[in-house]
Structure formats: structure tokens, C-alpha cells
Amino acid sequence: MSNQIRPGYMGLATISGLRIRCTSFTINPNQDTLFYDHVIGLKDTIPADSSTKGEDPDPTYVNTQKKIWRPSPISIGGGMSFPATDNNLKNIFLLARYANYFDLDFMYYCKNGTTGQECRRFKDCRVSDFDFSVTSGDIVNVSMNVFAKNIEENVSFYHYTTPEKLITWDQSPVIVTSPSFAVNHLHVNGINFKINNNVQNIYVARNISTTDSLLPWDLRVGMQEVTGSLNIYLESGYEFIPINLSSPSQIQISLPGMTLAMSVVFKSNQIEGQVGPIITQLPFVGVDQVFTIS
Image (cartoon, rainbow, N blue to C red):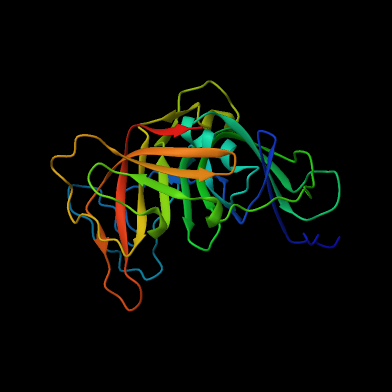
């Protein structure tokens, strides 16, 4: 019987019914072999009294190594990246913002058929990290890390041929309102931010004889942290954090189907000396409820 050649990379994901064309996908179950290691090395003598260990002079002598082991708990997680479209950005962002559960199907290969042998379903997922970035002249790119409670093989096969329009920089104007300094929105060169939900796998003792007992029982969401940076062309801004700042700044990004406002505090700016235009980086940290969505 000849080996089957799997034709190419499909890269289609479905999240709660929403189809996404991915540029990368690395979500997988992860498990390790854990050993109970003793203190006897490969060539050690084993003393029968209170003497210390030595090395056996026999050149062919070896002790048994790595004899007792157990399987580790199973974690299911990894990353996925995709260009944002007006069809997928808002719904995916809301899953990251609120850390809600969802199921994720992924199509790995371009085989024509209905068996679904190239598909996996990741069940009860949560977004751990969400990265948003856009630079002048480019498109909006999104990457995120996902944790899941369980996984199924051979889910339904599907195709997705509906055309979509990528969200470009000109569709994503950035407006900054700050009580401490002025930012001309015409000078904004790019923006990126990251949502970190600090998701953790929670394991409990379960009287189950299958591998399900090694899967996470729950996915706990920790404190949400939002960080990012604003890149400004020909703007120096402050080189320090103002000590008399009484209210946070506001960053507003207008996107197709969604206007996103962030409540932030700017940190000291970063200027890099280099040949070419000077672009100042203004790091920021999200505060309070951070996001307002309309």
C-alpha cells in the first residue's frame, strides 16, 4: 500500500461559525514524558555500605537509566495568525476582550473529499493573547494564542470560497486625545497593542481511566493586561511620564464595522537614532476598563 500524499496547506479555521483564512496555525495538544530519576549515574558503583559512590572500572559496565516514567498532563494550545477583514475582526476581538469560550475547527490540507480526515476541532477554547498591529501603507494583522480544554479528530470537511476585503491602513485612522501632550493624527505611522488574559490550565483529580483525566478541567482567566505602542512621525512628545497627569489619554481606532477606543497611560517615549526618518515610539498601558466598543 503506497503512502498517501497530502496536497498542500488549506489554512481554514472556523470559530463559532466564522470562517478565517490563516497565514499560520500552531495550535496542538502538548504532552511530555516525565521520569523519576534516581541518583545513580551511568558508570557509578552502587555501594553496599556507607562508602561513597565511585566509577566502575569495567569499560562495558552501565547502570539502568530512565526506567520509571509517567505521562504528563495534557495542555492544548498554540498560536494562529491572519489578516483582518471586515468580516472577522470585530467578532474575534470581542472573544479576546471578554475571554469567552468558543469552539475552533481547523482545516489543514487541500484534499477534496468529505471524510474530514484533515480537520481538527478544538473544544472550549479561550484567547490567552491577542495582538493587533497596523503600519502606514500596510494591512491590519492579527495574531493570537489560544488554549483549549479538549480536541476531536476528523470533524466535517468544508471549503470556503467567499471573497473578502482586507482592512488597510487608510481604513484605520487613529486619533489620540491626551491631557499631557498633543498628537497630530496625520503624523501617526502605526499602532500595535496586545491583550494578555493570563489564561491558565486548571487540573483536578478525576477517577477516569482514559486520557481525559490528564486534560485540563478548566481554563482560568487571570488579570487582563493591555500594552502597546504608538509610532509617531516627526513628533517628539514627552521624554518622561508627567507627574501631574490627572486623567488617562484616549486612543481611538476607526475600523470597518467597529470603532475601538482605549483608555491608556503613556510611558516615556523611545527615540532611535538611525539613517532615515525619525519615528518616535510612544509605549502605553491600558487602564481601567480600557476598551469602549461602538
